[in-house]
Length: 141
Image (cartoon, rainbow, N blue to C red; front, side, top):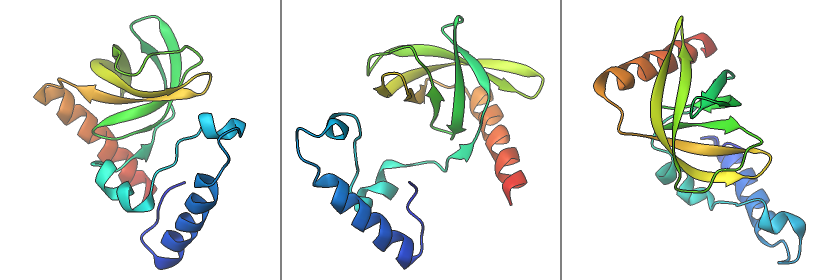
């Protein structure tokens, strides 16, 4: 769920967070889902995320599908399990080409997907990603 800027959205998110935070330790969801205090949301996200549903390759062979992207990273749906901290190569389709970037696995939910953060991007890669994100954001307006 995304925290909106309006008071209703912030209040609603806080109520949901509070209820879910109180799940008993033995509850199956308590080990799968991680919830974040709404006050930490803006601090944690440095870049705006935009929807980005594309097929891509990890390490040149493992197929996955992205769900969103930002200048800092992306989330991919992947059945394969990766360990937090793994450094991987991701091939991202941009227009008629693909760029391959290094990324670090920040978290992984087995069977669901993983959040990855781009690392060691050169200026050209940063520019292409920024252009892609701006074009997607422009279509959403």
